[in-house]
Length: 612
Image (cartoon, rainbow, N blue to C red; front, side, top):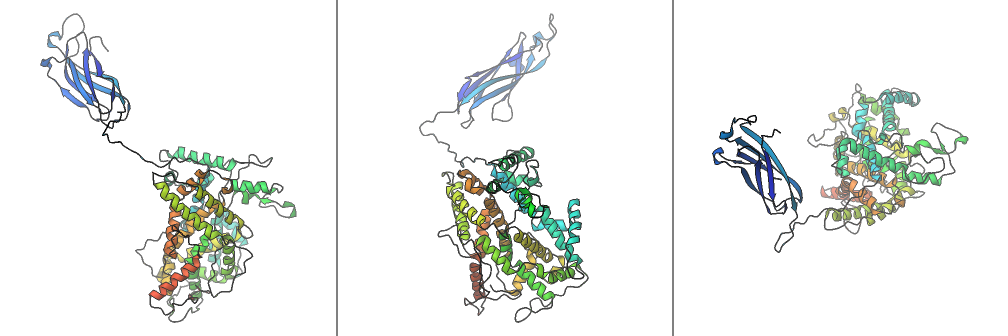
């Protein structure tokens, strides 16, 4: 700055002040020339725009003064007070000899710090109180829950429909061509159906499971919805790349922690499966293509790429009458009359010019290769202790069952509802120990039934039900199954199922609730089954599990009450079989419509074998 231009000396008094106090500010020109202030613009913390003071040069003002009234709620700390001064050289000195002439008008700036301290409370003061939820401690298993959601969403019907519509990758196309050569069916003219069945298998092979590999940490999180995961994990402050890196870091720690056998220290496992591997320490891990007595061992793919599906998904879709509706249509396709009285599907005539006819022809002839209701019922009893066969059918003779699963699962949902209420109440520290204990009980029940057909039967059941959904979603179905267009179902197969239910007078609970029970139930049970809950002692992990899965937990509780009438949030917890509650609701429905069938006798549903 040239020597003949002024400087601003800004003096705050005092320079340390309490909230609600006043700071007097003086801006003085320091110069050897005669300058007078014509304008002073002040900027105080929290005040936004400048406060402007103007003066006439004839008044010969050499210092400007202002007062900063510190707000009551000013955040304690050190702040900059800024002033912008415009000054004009005195006319008598303008152009004087000796030194170079000074500019007529100059603009100079000044800055000084002021420290604000919190004001001590006085009698009668209002005290601001802030209540917030207790601290959330991050745990590595949160990344596993993210992987579960991503995996189950990859197997959804909408993804499946997109896959069949032509979005297969080259690898999937090659796999489809290879499987078609070995998936022959002993009936003529079934090419369309054979392609559908093989493509469905390829879809599941490509999207089912979570790859546990320390060298490919991003594989389980491909296509992840980062915005939703940020909300679930309470990380709104992280951008996409840091957030994605944090999830991968948690995942790496999760799959590499815990003891390992000698020589497998660098091998990645889910902690639960790592414990199982230690139990079978005398058994080698072998490749999937190995065969023969010399390859006795643990299959590598089952250990490091578990397929994350649950049979409860199929159970709730069957209770939604997905299979029953398809069975009724297949019977009518074969020109078989179902039930007494007028035929609800009398106008069903599928012309042979479109693919649906060939697909149904193939499905009819392939019936011998599909799972029967009895096989699925036995497996459900083995997995969850849930009975699907209704009164009037042959009694079951299961080898064993999880008779305590339903009670344990419903008690878990009950204590979860209590925890969520306490967690939302900022005056209470929610206790997660009851949730942790309930998770251990459900985990024990699930793993006890994790044998025999555990993997293969749910795989085939999922493949068959996806094919049913695809056929029901075909546009040809709209011609003879008119739907309620203004009901926005999230998946295209749901409209036809609702229509068939109305035509036959089946239970009127919306298929939407059953679909939610299927999706939410599968995700919740996967997180319980494959989590190493027996080795967890700290309640923070249980609390994080509830907070992450809150939408699914509350959605399941609501949907269960909507279809069965049982409220799982109240004492005593209802442990009645869902099929019994559904049957009772049907009897109430028939009684409400004036039907004479109001006794407790089995209700035969037209269109499929079995009773309800």
